Length: 248
Ligand SMILES: [Zn+2]
Ligand SMILES: [Zn+2]
Image (cartoon, rainbow, N blue to C red):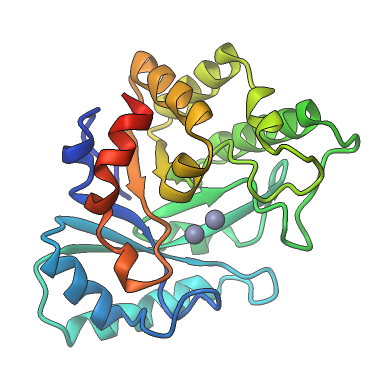
């Protein structure tokens, strides 16, 4: 479990990187060993990182066993950075979770994704409109909040994995400010944080400016997550100026 202190200062938030993939994620570069990740994090002076490998529908609950392997490796590396060993978990439909709750609860950090629409088993709305995708994401997020399984939402609202529309920003434009505020408030009451995910923020500045401003108004907790798949993405501070231009 990890719940960041409430701050809207980007430099402060960037002392943490709560979204890093290791070699346990097939999509991560081979250089993403646990040893080299923590060495890099120490070199960058980060206080806290979270290792968040993808879970797998075919290898149910495998992230729990993986966590133990990662912990073993961590014991062999001297490091200063505090490491949370979690996972990027899948809510692939309303109340549809890829792992058992016992598995989720054994993790130090449960980063929940609701929008990996490129994944084969992910449920899509019945009608293919931007608004239908927005409603689907809101309903899935609501079910995650009620499930008590999550510490943070990964790249929430992001439409980058929806390929049905010429302009994917149509999906993020389909969320109203009230809907964003309401779901943020519900999550906040359940101590679930909201990610400022690097590819998401940089890929849809207009939306994430709105997201940050509404979140600040509601009083949510934000986490920085660069979604690092290579060592050069471990340090979020390289994106600080860009984040400030977009979010402030
Ligand atoms: Zn993701
Ligand atoms: Zn990720």
